[in-house]
Structures are given as structure tokens and as C-alpha cells.
Length: 110
Image (tube, rainbow, N blue to C red; front, side, top):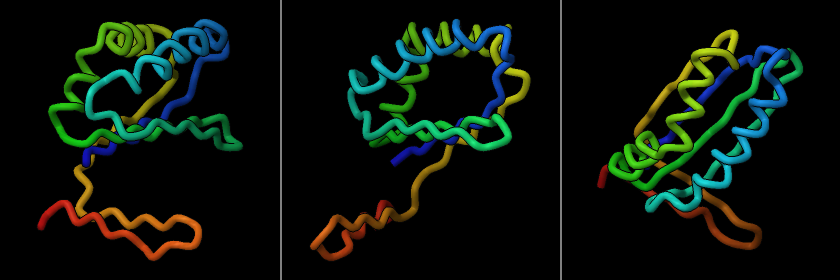
């Protein structure tokens, strides 16, 4: 599994435009083959954190190549973000627990 952690602060001048394009990005993500999940969080200091998961690097690369996502990345660099950090990771192990079930271990390295 490939996990992308995207941390950023948005220039308030572009907040409405960012939200509109951001909605399009959120809408297109699940259409990418290999998509797993997309979550966005807001910290008290104004920083946002988005976590996106894909099954493998090929799926992640399809996400990077998506035209809507490419437009968002370009506009983010040009105008939206006062600062950002993108970290792309390969999951070594994933532990999941659902109510009333045992923990499921998904060991991605055998």
C-alpha cells in the first residue's frame, strides 16, 4: 500500500477557489483504479492534512497523472499554498480492527 501524507497551509485569498477545485479532486480520487481511501483533517493552527491511500505504486502514479489532480497540484504551487509538505510512503504493515472483530494484519512484505 502507498500512503501519501499532504500537509499544507492555504493562502486565505484563494480559499474559495481551493475548496472548489479540492472538491473535484476528492470526487475523482475514488475513480482511480487501486484507490483505497482519502481523508482530510484540519488542525487548530490552520494547517490541513490529507491522507490518501492506494493499493500500489502503479495506482498512486495514475493518481499523480490524473488531469484534475495535475491542475490542482499546479494551482497549489502557483497560488493556493503558503507552505506544504508531501510525504509518500510504502506501508510495511497495516493493522485494522472493526467493531466485534479481531485485528486484521495486512503485512505487505510477506
